[in-house]
Each structure stands twice: as structure tokens, then as C-alpha cells.
Figure 1 (cartoon, one colour):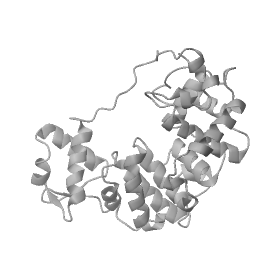
Figure 2 (cartoon, one colour):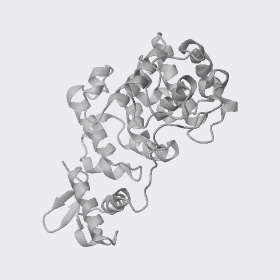
Figure 3 (cartoon, one colour):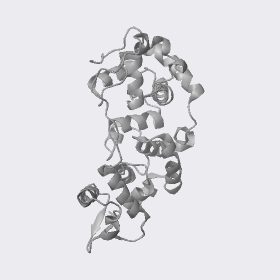
Figure 4 (tube, one colour):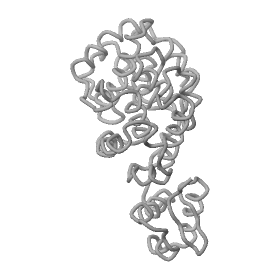
Length: 302
């Protein structure tokens, strides 16, 4: 099914903004990156950590990270391997390297302050379309379409009338998001946060709580009788037995070590040698592990 590029007659931006933002004002979670003292750096750190990782896993790592590195320059002074170490078990550890790279660039190019301009944010290493828009919106109150998985699902259901959005963000979704964006800058930034929270707490991927939804009466999917997903199969996230699991086990050994780790110690974490070697080679290629002479390995120093 092709997503429309403008709101349906059942739901429009004007009729969605007020109830969703009012719901958000009453039900938004008190999260540390939403507090005024978080600052733009706190918002940026949260956005890196929350990609593909639930809030409850992020919270303790986020607090420890900001206590250790309250400004980008503090992180930039450290070896990138320290960022990987502090990332712990959040998963997708390349995000830690990208965040470290962004901190170095912020320190070198912007005097240690997270830039406010969207184009400057987008030019930072490791920052893509979504993160630049999210930081500009949530940290600086600017008007940008912020499309994460939760927002895409809300728009797919409320406006497009389908159960799930496409597997990858489409041009039609971006056009729809821009069409739904409030003209007022402050309202737009509130709308971005509110629609995201609605998808996280109410319009969830499974067991959606339509009875608690502030826009259920105008939701195109609900009005259509909640038809089942007709698009391509949704990607599942398997972990057990994958290279991701092996990579995680290898990194866990290196994170705990204070000195370079011998190959034999890494060999013990996974019995299948071909997959283990492939996972280790991938970590080295990604810059997450640094090989040393004598079959030793450590987290990267440069």
C-alpha cells in the first residue's frame, strides 16, 4: 500500500496538534534529557543512546556518562576506547565511537558548544538526518520534522490508515511529516516530542492502547477497523547465536580489561572459531578493537 503524501480528511495537522500536545503536557515521562539543565549536549547524548535501545536500559548509562563527561570537550580529551568502555551493554557500540567523534568535532569546530544550526549539526561526524533534526528541535526548540520509529507509526495509523510504516523511511513519509508540522516554532518542537511520546507509550507496535489515545476518534486506522498489516514482512530482531552476540561477548572482555588482552582469552568466549574470527575481524574493521603485536587486543586509543 502506498502512503499518501498529505493528511487524510479524517486527520489533519490542525486537529491533531492540540489534543496530542495536551496529552503530552499531562502524561510525558520525567526523563533527564527533557529537563532544562540537560542542555544541548545532554539531548545529543540521549539521542545517540536511544537509537534502537529502550529508555530503561539507557537511563543508568546516560547518568554515568554525563557525570563523567558533562561537556563535549571532556569526552573529546579521552581515547575513543573509553567511550566504548562506558557504553557498556547498550548495544550497537559504533554509536559510542560516533558520539566521541562528534564531541571531538564540536570541540574543534564550535568551541565546545553543540551547534544550534541544523546544517552544522548535520555536518558533524556520526550525525544523520534524524539526529540533527532531533537535537535542533529538542535542544533548541526549532521547527523540524523529527521522524523516529514511534512517530512514523503514529503517522501511519492516524493519517495513512495502515498498521505499520514501511521498513525504511520513505520520501512520502517525509513529505507527510512536513505537511503535519505546525507553523509556529515552539508548537512544532512540542509536537515533535509529543508525537514521539504517544508512539512510545500508547500507539505502541504491539498491544496499542487506543482507549487512552487522545486522537483515537480521528485515527484513520481505527476508523477503518484496524486492518492488519498488508506490506512486506516486518523485520524481526534476533540476537542469540548471531555475530552481534559474539561481538558483544568479545567487547565485554575488552571493556573489563585494564591491559591488552591475549587472543587466547578472546577465544574462550565463543566456541565456534570461524564465527568468532569473523566477529573479531568486524570489530577491528569498525574501529572498535585495536590489534597489537603478539596477538594482543585492546579498545582503541586513537
